[in-house]
Length: 101
Image (cartoon, rainbow, N blue to C red; front, side, top):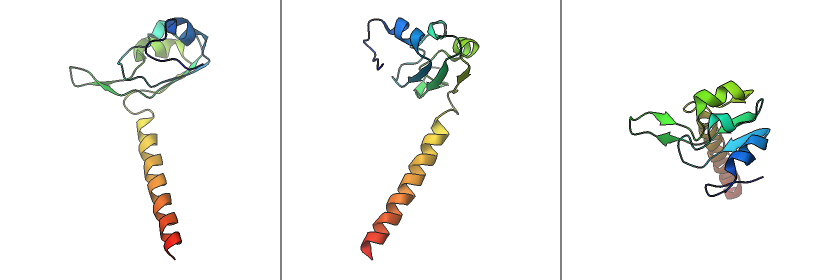
């Protein structure tokens, strides 16, 4: 199931998910108590709060009590994103050099 910021029954959809990937760009939009016990939560959102602190799209403190696994923000998928970006950049450069030969 794919949801978005205007999904009318977001709470129910979140509650049914065994694996939840959240990337909406709104800090704390997904409330921790909505999460199905034992679900795996991958929070891709990165939001800067007025305090300057970074926060994900999922209420981390509440969600970590219900989820079997959850990625933190910061430090969750961000480092992996950078790693894959570098990998793909090097791969593209290598393929470009091979085409020039």
